[in-house]
Image 1 (cartoon, helix red, strand yellow):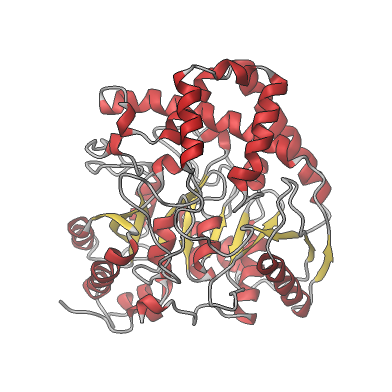
Image 2 (cartoon, rainbow, N blue to C red):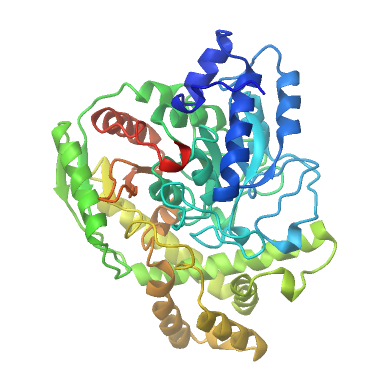
Length: 502
């Protein structure tokens, strides 16, 4: 096997340039990725399915090296982007043996860049947790410390990219699922604006517009160049946002002065750790040193109200998802095929009424409007995306008591309790700090639809990454790319490598 020794030192653009100049071949890059996956995946469990044969076929189909990332290996997240004739297992036993019969538009766009899809990255079951520890497939581990979580739901993508298996990987974000793993693994994670990418042909949107698709990467330019390729809409998409081709790439060189607000308090009521506070202050100082105007600010929206509305929306869509999957699989799921917490989501989704769903949509839109109006004076807002350094495996998953309570609710058919507003509010208010403690405010930009990016400028004293989030105005990824490029120059993270790769 021919291995390109310098493979891990290049990002996707760098590898593609070498391939197009014939200094290395696509096979050299792919063989290098395969070697790393085979050596490191037993330690990390970042890839749930390898697709080497498919990747080699892609090389044969693209002899002319067409596409921005021609010959560059990547991973496809094992949910949110179907690939015909391959399983999309979504971390669940229920889907392990079910092949998809179509390509998503996003899958087609990744393929059109010339990138080589060489594996399916790990996810928690149906992307419903911000840690990647599905019971059926086992936990995915953080390459900076294999005792720690890489976050979720794009945890496999982040673990694989941080371990240098591939320079970038597909990711998606319905409640922090791009940004949380990026922050946990020392990567760039841009959650794009709502409607930037298509969910066709199967869906108009996902989770009522809360879900966004993209990548995690090691460099800002890979992020800019890939999003320049995949920002697109198709006939039949329910809404769209205009994008001028090439504009993100131009933003890499934009150096205009910005007004930046930073926030240290969570509206959900969860205090960030000392490390998380230091990470914000460190980044605020970096921005100030770069010549930007920086000041402290506070959010005034009701974080627990937002989390209650978010829960109603998510559980309702989980129920609809299982209606769709029943047709794909050919039968309903059996209890032992789906995790307890997922089954509770399905049960609650069936318990809520249409009036609950419309209330949740109205509430989230009202919150979105007020937040965007309150922060419009800033070009960028800096906040924690995770409340602390990544915790150990098992700390985020529901404990035995939580699972027992969930089983009791379903067994005794107590869903009616959640239709009584005072009781529902009290229960969900109590659950918010317990379930959102690691990423308490990640859902805000899913609600507003605004773009936001996790940037890895800060490492703890024991060399664990703790990324922070920058959010911009609606449809303004350009400012985020510009600022990220400046921060990458001022505090280069590309030279930081986890021990597992050495």
